[in-house]
Length: 157
Image (cartoon, rainbow, N blue to C red):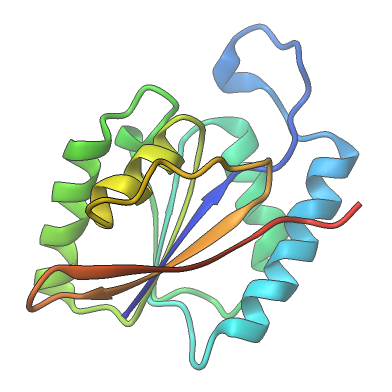
């Protein structure tokens, strides 16, 4: 199965709270660009999408959704904010995968969680850097919990 980990698109610097920072125009464009790239990688649909409750992550998903298959299950997950614990999120994700057996999972989250989560899922992997709108792909075997980092893609421009 494949796990895709994505950092939200570029967000404005200032807002009343960090959670309320909206995407910039570039953030919107880059998120759409990456959705098209991800769509070309999908052999089927999207089984599960987890999105942070923060505005910029929600807007990233909204920009992407028009270019991707409708997911079987779309969830706003409180634990995947910038302050989420990678170990806890990885444990939760692995448990959900073991029960629901999705073929594809997309997680739209934030730094530093995205890098730490990739490292948590792929033992020995140094925490990769994620530019805004970057996506990493991980091959994951639910029965053995073996994982392999496949690729990381960044938006152009």
